[in-house]
Each structure stands twice: as C-alpha cells, then as structure tokens.
Length: 316
Ligand code: NAP
Image 1 (tube, rainbow, N blue to C red):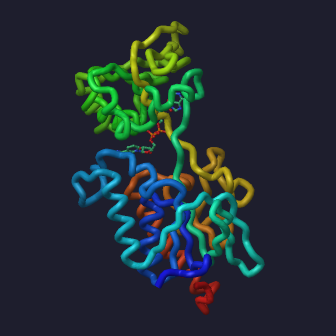
Image 2 (cartoon, rainbow, N blue to C red):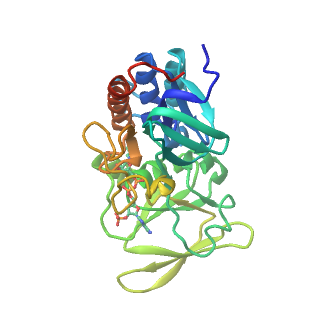
Image 3 (cartoon, helix red, strand yellow):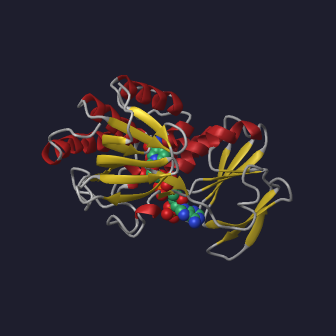
C-alpha cells in the first residue's frame, strides 16, 4: 500500500545504479522505502549508449538498464518522489529529516547515492556555447555532428568511450589531452588508437571555445612548448571527470578533499543512520557494478540499523 505520510524507514537519495540497487534490497527487506531523485532515473548511465561491462549482460543501453532496475525495485514496493534534497537534519529521536524542494521527508535511515556531475573546463565560450556545439554527452548529442569535425577533451575512460561513440557520426574526432599518456583503461585505449577517425593532440589544453552562435573552433595551448593553435571543429565534447553532489552535506558529514563522503566497509558515514554508496563516496571504483554492490551493502546495513534502533517499526 502506498505510504500516505512523508515518513519512511529507509529513504534513498539519487536514482543511479547505487540508489536503484539499494531500493531493491531495502524493499525486498520489507522496509518502507522511498527513492528521491531530482532529475531522471539512471543518473550517469541514463546517458550512456552501451554498457558492456555489467557481468552477465553482454551489451545494454544504459537507459534501458536503469529502467529495468527501477521497475524491479518498484515491483517490491519501492516508491519514488521527484524533488531536490537541500539539507538533512537529525532529530533528537535519531530520525533524519530531509528538506526538499517538495517539502520535508523523515527517515529512520538515509542512503545517499547522488553520484556526481560533469566537470567544466571553465574557459571562455564554454558556458555560452553549451548546447550550441559544446556537449558533455556523446550519446545525447553526437548525432548532431554527422560528417563534421569535433574535439574530445580528456584522457580518461569517459573521453575514450564517448570519443569512440562520436566516431559513429563524425568525420574526424581529435582528442585533446593535457598529458602525453592516457589515463583510460587498456581496452578503451587500444580501441581509440585503432580507430581511423580518432587522432590525438598531446600535452595540450583548451584555452577558449570559439564561435558567435555556434562552435567554430577551439583555441588550444601546448603546455610543453607554450604554442597556441586553433582546431577547426564544430563540436567540443568535454569529459574531464565529475564532482560529487555533496555541497549541501558539507557541514553534516566527513568528506575527502574532493568532496566525496567518507564511509567504512558497510557504507556507513560518521553520522549514525546515514549511509553513502556509489560515485558519491570516497574510494569508489566508479563502475555500474561497483555502485550497485555499494547500494546493496548500504541497504543491508540500513535494514540492520532499523532493526537495532527503531524495532517497533513505528515509521509508516
Ligand atoms: P577521470 O578518470 O577522472 O579522467 C578525467 C580525465 O580528464 C583525465 O584524463 C584528466 O587528465 C582529464 N582532466 C581533468 N581535469 C582536466 C582539466 N581541467 N583540463 C583538461 N583535462 C582534464 O574521469 P572519467 O573518465 O569520467 O572516469 C571516471 C571514472 O569512471 C573512472 O574510474 C573510470 O574508470 C570510470 N569509467 C569507466 C568506464 C568503463 O569502464 N567503460 C567508462 C567511463 C568511466 P589527467 O589524466 O592528466 O588527470
């Protein structure tokens, strides 16, 4: 039966793989469970064309995988609300109050799985031309650049994976990386090197993205020689990592220097009853499968926590 109050035993914040796995485990433990998401189900994987490293699944579209995960958790009773969580306060009785754009929610245990947002370069032209040639999602935007030349910024797994994806459409993709070695894993490196549409500009950073109403080029600077040059491109795809969505929790929980939440092996934070799982936590492997594993671990522990601290199941 749907919960008619705003009180739940377990509330999960964020509907990426960690949150969806936590929801499945919490709901199957017969805990009243709410998932709060501010955007769309799936988080980062919802924007990923091909997930091909989730064990047992050879290849699946990220959005389809997220939809399946959500449906599976909902089948066991997990509810979903769409709201922006802005603060968490802890009451004298140990329950946590989540302040959101849609009002307050109360939980015995909270599992934070809000993931991370794409980093920006912070160069002139980037913000103004976002959506007009500047993109942070190849899956979403590559099709707009059919037979055109684009730049791909970054040297990690995301840059290689998304760079490979854009080659399905573009004439040429130039990877601009600030060092002379890629950070990306071997398999993606090999595929990128073998792709005839991909070339590399090493030791270089973007200084400006050029264009009045749409991207016409990118000014780049070689960090070794200091030389600047212009790449004639109509698209700039930026994949330089992500920052965890933890700004609103800074005074509440212990974090590392990068703003990732510190947890123990059970995904417990330093505040009793608050857990963190997936990309939002420190030392995460940042994979779909590891995020899902984190979410399951957090939910199992949260279930024990409710048993120990709120045995009468007075919530909901
Ligand atoms: P990442 O591993 O942090 O790589 C970010 C890249 O951007 C690095 O090459 C970095 O350069 C560069 N960079 C950072 N700031 C920059 C700046 N201001 N200007 C220019 N370049 C900058 O991030 P990611 O590629 O998004 O990957 C995140 C995590 O997800 C990783 O653990 C990754 O393995 C995982 N992932 C896995 C897959 C997969 O397995 N299929 C796919 C995507 C992501 P430096 O190398 O010099 O630091």
